[in-house]
Image (tube, rainbow, N blue to C red):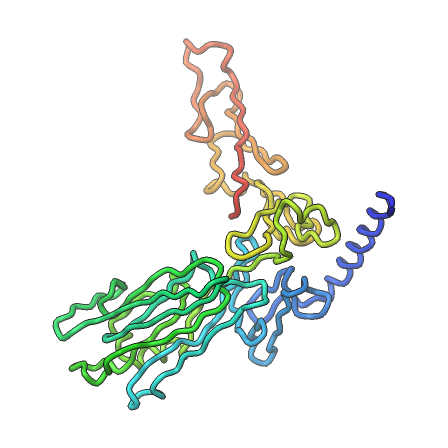
Amino acid sequence: MMSRKLLLLLLLLAATAAMAFEQNCTRRCGSIDVPYPFGIEPGCYREGFDLSCDVTESKLYAGNIQVIGVDVPNGQARVYKRISWDCDDSVFPAKVSIPMDLTGSHYTFSDTRNKFTAIGCDTIALFVGATDQSYSTGCVSICNDNTTFSNGSCSGAGCCQTSILRGLQFFNITFSSTGHEEISWDNPCSFAFLVDGSWYSFRTTDLNGTDFFNRNDGRVPMVLDWSIGDDVGCEEAPQNLTSYACRSNNSSCLNATNGIGYLCNCSGGYHGNPYVEGGCEDINECDHPEKYPCHGLCANLPGNYSCICPEGMSGDPFLSACHSYSSSSSSSSKHSSFTFPHDSSPS
């Protein structure tokens, strides 16, 4: 059986080699950061997190999916997806629906960030997904000549939104309608898409097919959740030192909430990348009083900070300014010292 000293030596050598190779890794594609566990060149990413960079257009891809942002602390990535539509023949080809399949990857469609959205009148859009069992949901938007529309409102008049199920890695969209030609005013299309709910806000002009399609070249951003999908959670993962993804000393393991596996997060009072050696660095809370209040004397501590009233003053310096002792103050309360308990949940 391998001795503990030999195992530690091998791990140290592997970490040293990884740090040396990391200097040759491309960590940016155009304006997009590419942090580990993602990477572009072989050896610069964890298995399953390889990306490619189109240098000519400065665009980042995961397979054929364009990536527009990577969020390591929250285990998410923003990507572009083509919308689906059902139009009369005078505008676009009658129907186009492009499915999206993430099966076998580390990605799932975020159920907390995305909304299934349909816009138009005489619009019935069905979202068909797949987990271990078949799943479907839908959106209906029916209106007539007397319907009043409102920018920003997506409650069924011209626009409808609904949530999706957790754990989906595949979806397709289908339409049902009685024909756009029966609407007496200009509404030639129905559109449907899964979209980052914080990005899309309904505009009445979206009911004109070409206006909405041209807004973002027929694409919308959506959010994918990702995890270290090793089929194990935080109970088992730390036992395998060579494959365990949380490499920083000041990091912790979190079971994935959407999909299988786990995520890594910097411990409370630290920030950075928990997937690399030394990636979680101490936060100097005293440099950020808007987030870490202190109305007295602030001192940074490893993973924390202290806040005390100056000598001769009292009070709770986390809540308000310290004040001078009154003549009736007891001598036992001349100096107050506190440390702030950090929230260790993901930022």
